[in-house]
Length: 264
Image (cartoon, rainbow, N blue to C red; front, side, top):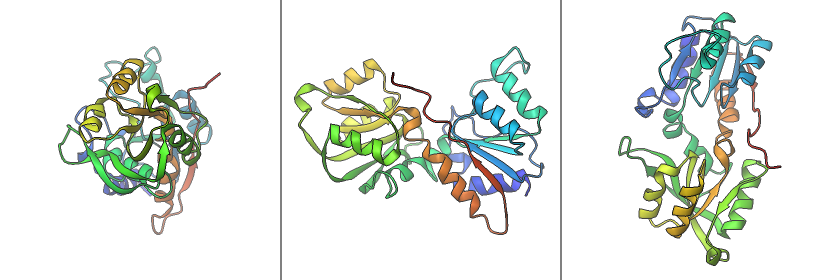
């Protein structure tokens, strides 16, 4: 199966038109006419993942987060991203990223809020300013009323992650929540939207110290599951999607390298 044919399937699932203007999705390295038999799926194109792809002789690497965000003026071994580009090109590995287009359509938020993970009901999209119509997150009703601490334990269990972080005022420790806002990845920029919609429990990642204090001042409890915590589900989802392509027998490697953050 040619790389271009696989891309067509991926873009039927998550059209590139749904990506944010600042994003960089699509075929970032390689030739679209390459014949592909073996694919590796990962969250990030880290050096560890690329070395693994080389070792396994894969034809194509697909990640959620793009390895290339800003312009590259040089591609050589002295430039960190350039070195990774060279490694992929030298070994004939096509590299495709599906980021905010997958977050919006396909898609990460819908998957995270669905029965396999959070099992929310009465869901609606968190509408982002980028396009004013679609949402990378979800508002929804929890399967049962929970305190923030109970919700944190529930998230760890459902997403199979070792830890989360909780920003919460002391006086809200016993507060029970029926609803939650969910933004996989980094959700700092949508805090005001969560507040305006009246949600007091927010699940996301990459929530910094100052943003956490702001949320607490707003009366919002934030569960920070790390950027990896809510998005590693991309790997198994895409593996299942590619296995269902009719008439194809692709070899797939799901390269979940684990959370890069360790609590010592």
